[in-house]
Structures are given as C-alpha cells and as structure tokens.
Image (tube, rainbow, N blue to C red):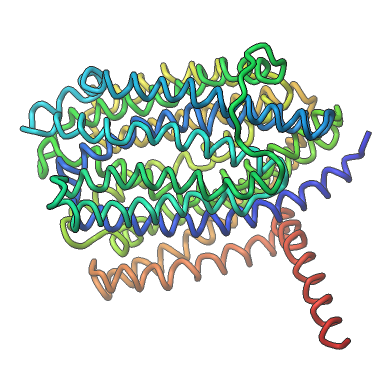
Length: 552
C-alpha cells in the first residue's frame, strides 16, 4: 500500500492538472462572458431574455443532472477501474456501450421533451402568460434548444474518457468552442440570414446554442480517436461495466434531480415576483446573469479541481489505498478553500463594479446592474460550499457509495423550498432571497457530506483543514478591508460610470490579491506554498532543459 507521502505527490499532480484545466476554463469563461455581454446588450433583462434564459435552462439543467452530473460521476470511476485492472480493449468496449446507450436514452428524452414543452413551461413558469407572447416564445425557444442535451451528453462522456487518460486541456477547452460557435452562428442567423429564413434574433441565438453544442462534441473526437477510445455503435445491456454504471447512475440521477428541482422551484418563484421598476420581467434575468457570473470562480477552481481529483481518487480506491485517498481528498479541499474563500469575498465587495464594467450598456441599464449585483452577493455566500461539494460528492462514487449523496441532495429540496418560499412569500424580501436559498442549500450539503465522508474514511485531516480554513478566512478579511477602502474611494471619486467601474476592477482586484497572498505568507498558509511548489517545479525543470539546449 502506498503511503500518505504518495498522496502529497498525487496532490502535486492534481494541482498541475487543475492548473491546466483552470487555464482552459478561464478561456471558456471569458468567451462565455463575451457571449453574455452580447446577449445583455442586445436583449437586456426584459421578457425576451427571461424566455431565453428559461428555455436554455431546461436542457442545460438536464445536462447538469445527467451529462456532467450522474454520467461523469458514474462513468469515470468505472472506466478508470477498467483501465487499472483490465485491458485497454475492454475499456474501449465500455466506451462504445455507454455512447450507444446515451444516444438511445437521451435521444428519446429529447424527443419527449420537445413534444411536451408547453406542459412543462406551464408548470414552471405559468406566470409568463401575463405578458403577451412570452409563454409562446419560451416554448418555441425550448423546442429549438432541447437537442443540445444529446450533444452535450456525448461531449461529457468524451471529457470523462480524456480526463481518465490524464488529458485535461482538450476537454476543458471544449466549452470555449460552444461559446464562440453559439455566438457566431446565433448572430449570423439572427441578424444576417434571419430575414431570409424568417428567424427572429432571439431564435437565431437559440439555433446558435445547438450548433455550439455540436462544436463542443466534435472538438474532442480526434483526441478520443488518438487515445484509442472512439465512439461506436455497440449494444449489450447485460455487460457488467454498463450495468455497474447504470447502477451508480440511478441514485446519482435522483440526487442530482434535487438540484434541478431546486433551480426550477426558484425559477417558478422568480417568475411570480413583481418588481416595482420592471413589473413581472427582470428577476429571472438578474438571477441568471448573477449565477452565470459566479460560474467563473466555480469553474476555474471547483470544477477544475474536481475534474483533476476524481480520476486520482478513483485510482486510489481501485487499489484500496485509502491513505493516499484521504491525503488527496484533504489537500484538494484545502486548495478549494484557498481559491474560493477570497473569490467569494472579492465578488461580494466588488461585484457591482465587475457587473457594471462588463454588462452595463445598451438595454442593460444601471438598475439592472444594481439588481444583478444584489443577487450575486447572496450567491457568493454559498460559493465555498458549492465548490467543495463538487469534490465530495464524486468521492462517494469513487468508494462505490452513490446512495448517501442522493439522500443529501433529495433532502435539499425541502431545505430549499422552506427557505425560498419563506423569503419570497412570507418575508417578501424579493428575488435575492432565492439566491440566498441556493447558498444555504450548498453550504448545508457540503457540511453533511464532509462529516459523513470523514467518518467513512476514518478521518480526512479535519484539524489541518480547519486550521487552513480559519487562516485563509483571516487573510481574506485583510483583503476585504483593503478592497473596501479602495473601492469606496474610487467610486466616490469617479462615480458609478463605465470608467469608474473599470478603474475599480483594475485597481482593487490586483491590490486585494497582493494583500491576500502577503497575509497568507505571514500567517503560514500551507496550501499557498504547496500549490506554488507544484506549479513552480515543472516550470523550473522546463527552463533548465531549455537552458541546457541553448548551451549545447
């Protein structure tokens, strides 16, 4: 059995892999942000954008539930086990069996979804009928974008295969192709060819989503072929690997469904909120823009670390090396704390300026900036829990326990409904109460999962993690004081203008980062030095090799 020291080495590998994924995800998020800015400028936060966000959310939430949730969590550990304990040929057969099952199952789901779209929209957003044409537009856009689910499900399987083969950059870049492709095709169809084809601008953007999903899939196909795991038509429902994946996916789908139910409940509540400035239009868009904005640190840190951690702990579980498993899991959580705590604090304090600098303009006015920033503040309260859950839930799948995360996720439905309904219907706090509800659910889920996995593994270095958490929180406190002072001074001097927003982001963000790193160094935060060594080591070796070649 390998020692816990091997876990440190594995953690260094995870940090490097997560760094690769983070770089690719950063590009993805920037292209995604460009797409969001164009959408905000063209369509603002009114009824058209509300309809588009709801229509896109339906297949997108099913993607989170099935493709990037249950499928990835069940497929990657099983595929990794085949690579570790069986032959490459058997692993390739498993890949083809799963891809065929996806086409049959998800393809049928898409067909049913397109048929029953009006009934589904009627359940989750019946209040759309109060605005003429809004309900019908949501139905039309949903039917256009539903096949996106099949494309992105296959793309998620391709990502799982490549990640298990320690290839992280190509799949992480795939979503950039979605963003660029969906924007380019959407603008072309909506504003250039739409007049000839009878397509409205917003319908053009919906067709762009479909084409972007195809690009996200086909970008990864050449890498699949090179690794020896191409997709293919093969069907054998009795295959033990496929049956094991389906066995894991059952609880995973039920557990993930709770998250989607929560989102749809919040969407339904938001659809019924009457804003004094905008009436019934606006809250869905504000929440949508804010949540997309929070996806930046979540993708850069939470998803990137989770993508690099899952194959590693799956290999440890396959070898029954739980000393390495505990070490790897603990250090991955510490890295999540290091990156998400200051991100949460920074977004809370500087969210107004960030949103104003990026979104404000065209149909997206100052009032939209204020409301979106309000939602973002309450979303950031759950960022740490949200990111940590993406590490912990797959850890249960790696030890072949899909049931407990399922029960935690299902119980969150009640938690979310009680908090969200109370905020909106009893306390009448407005749409931001829905963002707070999301954060409460994420935090509670993280705490429950952490306590139980700690018991299952007989410890995950909890005292070390608590110490790191408190030190990182303290360093973030110093950062918060500096950012608050800097931002207040700049806003008083330059006002809430585009130039003022840009100046605040340009000055306060790097200033806060420097203060945070200095505070971490003074406080002795272990994760900073460990991450630096893991990244600096390969860079140093590369530079040494480069010097050697120059000298020779």
